[in-house]
Image (cartoon, rainbow, N blue to C red):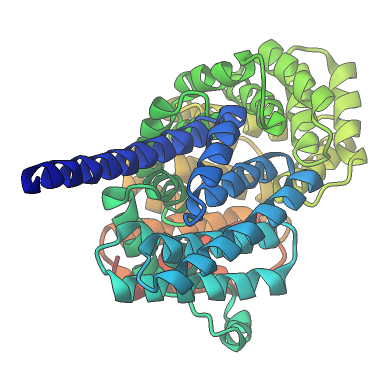
Length: 499
C-alpha cells in the first residue's frame, strides 16, 4: 500500500511538472507568434493561456505587447485604447499574485514590463507626465525583482532602457526628472540591456531590438546594430519592423543592393499588420535607387510612397529626390513641378526642411549646375562609391564656386575619406571645412566638427575630441541641429564614462 501511494504521488508530481512545462512552452511559442507578427494566432493562444492560469499575468502582458507593436507602426487610437485596457488587467492580476506569494518573480517581472510598456505608449502619445510616472514604477518594480533575485536576467530590461534613455535628455530637464525620482545612467543602462540580450529568456528579443537601436542612433555602431537585426529578422522572417530596421542599417553601411533585397521582401508581403512599414519601405527603395543613380526606378518607388502614405513627413524629401532624378533624366519640366511640390508641403522633419530650402535655392537659381552636381556626387558617397565621390568633389572644388558650395563639397570630400578609413586625409579636408565661414550651410561645418571628434575618439585623443564637441554645442540655428548635437552629446558621454 505504501509503495502504491508513493507511485501515485510520483505520478501526480510528474503530471504537475509536465503541465507546468507545457504551459511555459506554449507561452514561449505564443510570444514567438507575437514577434513574428502573427498577431491573430498569438492573440488566440494568449487568450486561452490567460484563462488557463489565472494567477499568471504574463499572457495578459504579451496580449498588451501586441498593441504596442501595432501602435508603434500605425499610431491608431483604437490600438492605444486596447493596450490601455489590457495593461490595467495585467497590473491587477500581477498585484493579486503578489498578495498570495510575495516572492513571485514573474509577477514582479510582469509589473516591471507592463509599466515599461505604459511609459513607452504614453511618451508616444505625448502624455509625458503619465509616461514619467509609469517609468518610475517600472524601475521600482525592477529594483524589487533584482533585489529578490539578481540572476533573474529578464528583469533588467526596462531599468536599462530608462537609464540609457533618460541620461540623454537635455541637462535643463534633469532637475525636472528628479521630481519623479528618475535619473539616467548611460553606462549602467547599456550594461543592463546587454545582459538581457545575452542571457535573457522571455525579454531577450526585445533587448536585442532595443540594443540595436541604441547602437545605431546613439553609439554610432551600425555594424553591431546590423548584426543584431540580421539575427532577429532571420529568426522572425514575418516581422516587418525587424526587416525594415535591418535595411536601414544596411543603407547606413552603404550596402545598398542588400538593403534593396530586404525592402523587396517587405513590399512583396500580401497581408500587413502595420501598413506604415510597407509604405515607408517604398520610400527607402526610392532612396536606394536614387543613391545608385537608378533614377527611373527611384521615381517609381517614390511615387508609390507619396500615393500610399497618408502623412506629410518625408514627402518633401521624396519629391526633392524625384525632382533631382527628373533633372538628370533631362525632364526639366517635371523636375520643376516636383521642386514646387517640395516647397508646398508642411513638415517638421529636419530632412524635409533641408530639402525644402534647397528646392527654393535650385528654383531661384534656375537650376544651378554646381548645386545639382553636388547632389549627384553625394549619391556616390551614399552608395559606397567613395573614390568616385572624391573625384567629382575634386572637379567641383576646382571650379569657380561660392563659399557655401565650397564648404559643403569640402565637408563631403572629407567624409568620403573618413568612410575609406583614411583618417589623415579626412582630417585635412574636415579642418578646411571648419575654417570656412558660411551661415547658410552651417550644418556642413557642424558635421565636420562631429567627424573630426569621432576620429579623435577612435585615436583615443579624448581631450581633442571633447574640444570639437564643445565647438558643435556652441553653434546654433542650422539644418539637422538636433540630430548633430544629440550625436555629439552621446560621444561626449562615452568619453566621460569610458565605454
